[in-house]
Image (cartoon, rainbow, N blue to C red):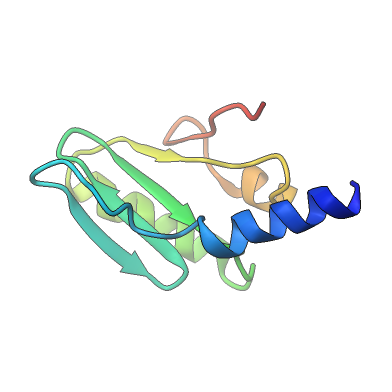
Length: 102
């Protein structure tokens, strides 16, 4: 990765990921869980985060599963190509979807 690409990726990770969107549809519920942001849209939900410390990753994932299951909402948890492979390997499929990366 070039120096410029590393700078842009760092800015993306630190300034955009894990933030709550400024404009959300009516009825949307946003919750924080440590480094995660859970967004419930009523019909589905999503999880976003900035860089993760991989301490109790299994517990963090299981907690998200339980919370979304209690609301009967499927989850979208985006894993980007620059994320640690540990995150992608830890997400159970298809309970939490893993969208492809460009």
